[in-house]
Length: 581
Figure 1 (cartoon, rainbow, N blue to C red):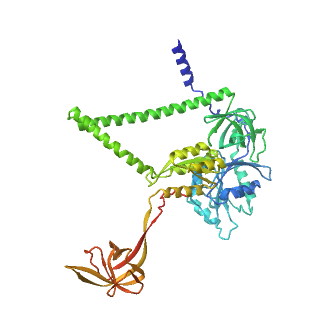
Figure 2: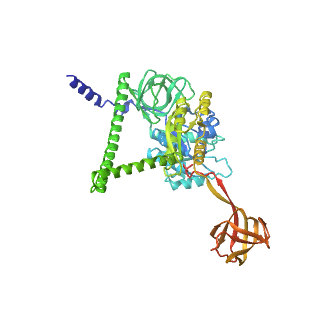
Figure 3: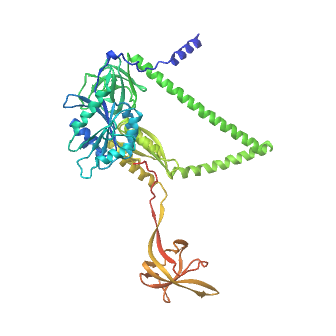
């Protein structure tokens, strides 16, 4: 009876209890909604400055390095009374995944291209993201106030990417603007609203809420917080939400200015407080009827994840089993004809040699490994940094080992992990308290804090380079031309001697030399003698003649050869990793 009851419980757990989006609403229930517009384009082409002018706040001035570091959502009221929700996606190459996510929750893309710079790498990426999401584009040609601006060049360059402006017979509206001066921004807003009217954007404001997590982060006073775009229904305080493997009972809501909201309708960006855990940016938000149902959905999703992990583990086990069988077969083929005692002895010797060799390999490998811990302010920032780390090729001279990553300020646990693995902690837009920094200093753990992502990457490149073996560089000291060749007798052998004139710098007998013929180095080594007339000397300066012989007797001089005196210096190597900035 007990076994039967246990089986019934297992069957109940395995029953699909996931939450899903509702079927399309009855057209009679739909009401007009503001368009959700994404600003896209290349870094430093003026996207944030454009938003700054549109919503009359100082966002650009507050950005570290003038670059938007994570995706933000803002509701803008235009003078005409129309409203537009803007998603300000980062223009940096590292945030291409976040830009793609922004395109998939948007209705219209405003593609910003600088008139003095033209189409760049992230411009092309933005076009691709908009196309993948099947979202129409409005072209904003920015920085038209500059003397070197050429808007027509931008229009022509975009033809190569099938972005055809109305001027060339296409359907893409193009507006020449200056985000810095505010010139023609009204025309851009009108073009966006006109396109939105053609799209006839509507949504169902009734029933359970549906939406998308735009960003997520942990706030010290408020716990896990998400920025979300509501796509269906009306969100109110007390609503029970599920996103990914997290759930929330909405404790409070606020807008982009921190003002408390009573409700959030379709197309509205809203900050949500009340999550039990931190969902990921891009997770689908669904409203459920009760906390019990929310827990049920989350448990089911965790169960599904565990099942997938079990399947993956079984695949690994099966591969290991096949490897073991293959190894057993090779042993049988190799030792099959031997007596069991001989077979055992040979296997033991092989294991013994392997055991002795492995620690040596491990020491060499560890000396070229950089273990890192990454902490970021929000989920999207950490994701972008991890995407960059993924571009690091395992074949590089120094290995990169990601020990741990997470959202939030640097903790004592991070310091302990870094100490254990001998790693470096990288913090992006997060803090490390004085107590944490003192603890890290005591444990000789490096904490690197950054607010601009490419500075973090430069720091990481430098840290990788430190772990590489030094490179020996040759620095010329002097150059001389061979004007004559002869030989002198020393004992019973003849030694080749070159008569030279110093053309540049000086020749120093104690330093290294190389003999160059027709542009090719045919010898490297030291001198056995350096004479000025008949006197042995240690230095010959520019314009002076000398005779010299090499430490290798088989090398013959020819008139026209070059002798280069040089010194060797060890310099730090630089990693070849280029994340594509």
